[in-house]
Amino acid sequence: MRLGVLDVGSNTVHLLVVDAHPGARPLPAYSRKTELRLAELLDERGAISPAGVERLVATVREALEVAEEHGVADLLPFATSAVREAGNAEQVLARVAAETGVALQVLSGEDEARLTFLAARRWLGWSSGRLLLFDIGGGSLEIAFGLDEAPDAAVSLPLGAGRLTAARLPGDPPSSADVRALRRDVRTEVAGVVGRFSRLGAPDRVVATSKTFKQLARMAGAARSAEGQYVRRQLGRADLREWSQKLAELPVAERRELPGVSPGRAGQLLAGALVAEAAMDLFGVESLDICPWALREGVILRRLDRMRAP
View: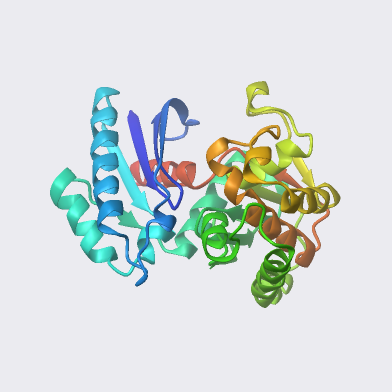
């Protein structure tokens, strides 16, 4: 059957259409991304502004029409931290449902971590052993660890690249004082959860998902996306530390010229690099693998599992 996932994130609204059947690998059929940047459309009360709500409704309506054009039989719509933490989340969800008929499911941060972990486990397989997973989104950082398809520990921290950029890194490029202050505070936040994972033992493999990690790996020399999903891509801690320092000195216009950096994400790449560096440093990770599957695939896999269940 043809499934559609509508992911209302902090940076983009992403419609992913796949041909999927229980027991088979979902095959991508169509992808459509709209940059909305909900995390930057908040008013002083932390609510999504009227203009932001209008844009969200229009974007969801357009995505629904596109899904119908592509023959989607079942649409799985969900929203993450930008909507979840908005001061007017209930009103926004009601407005979207009333004007588009789409009932967005708001995922908790732990839900995000667990579903992303499921996707990574299915991609890497059981032979990868105990997995430690990092995922940096626009609004939050997810960390999960475990041996099975459900992690033994999963947390979500308010350390998304878009959120931190908007709140903590004014200037282009930002001042060295702002960068140092953000680096210190990110490390304090990550350090606060390390013990919860370290008592579970050392991972056999460390994996990262998300656009931020993919771009950082590409900058550090990983294969281009055009070379296919099955090429192994890695990111080393030493390379990441070097690039974090370089990014701090570059204006956004120059970051856009770097290999693998999408223009819309260039502005928040420094914040993402600081979060990634903190995670790798504090968890003692020298190198990690980039996994092409993430939250959207996890939502699809959970839906297929429920179809297969008696």
